[in-house]
Amino acid sequence: MTLGLLAIVGTVLMWASSFVIIRAYAVELSPGPLALLRLLAGSVTLTLLLLWVRRGQLRMPTGRSLLLSSTFGVIWFAGYTVVFNWAGHFLDAGTIAMLVNLAPLMVALGAGALFGEGFPRQLFTGMAVSLVGIVLITLAGSTGDLALAGILIAVLAAVLYAAGMLVQKVALRHTDPLTATWIACLAGTLALVPFIPATLAEVGAASAGSILGAVYMGIGPTAVAFWFWGYAMMQFPAGRVAASSLAVPALVVVMAAVALGELPPPLALLGGGICLLGVGVAQWRRAGPRGLRSPGAQ
Image: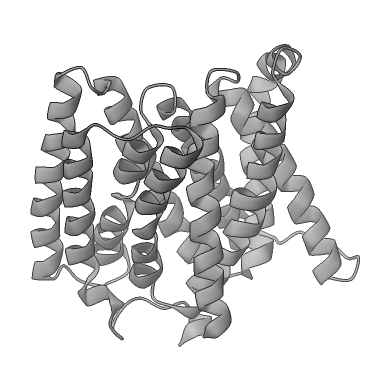
């Protein structure tokens, strides 16, 4: 239990830092190349971790385990990462974090429909509250304080995040967290192969900071954090783990203010807070013992 909680805390801190790094270097690397560099670093790190844990042996899973882990990787590692990077060209780090963290609410909907977790009243109440927050953030965009395109892109990132997490939950019924994360990262990297020419062209003109930032995101927020996250998914209900990401936006706002000197517009900050309140309301019941558990956590 203690290791599971530490895994969640470490993941939240590393994921929060990625929002700030994306925002800092979005002007130097376009979404695809930045994602490819990140996943390349993540794939190398995960391979080394797996060799260490498995004492020099790599065993590629087969069948459903391979298919589900690869699907999770293409959706979350490749798709989400590219769209997430894209949002950094339009919005401040805090607003992106608040919109992306609508994902736990989407996970709750998906878990209710796919895994039999049900649709409690709190879920629909939370959806209504979050809708008010989205309206306020959209109004901030309509006044010119935010880009409406960025708002839509960030919401798309949340959809991909939620879809990836739901597939990951199923994948973890067939393999361990580290192996699933390794396969997912490899699959995500392969999905981004078309960005190789653009990556080679942009790396030559990019600063050392942007390259190091991409490598860090591959090692920390991608490899280590997703391993930690997968471990936590094995220990706790999906809703409880997803709800822990509600701490990310607050950390991002603080980190961005310190590192970048930027804050979301006041109306967006209010709307984001309301969105997260809605997600918290929706997740309240799912922190209980009836939430979905993986086989290893029952």
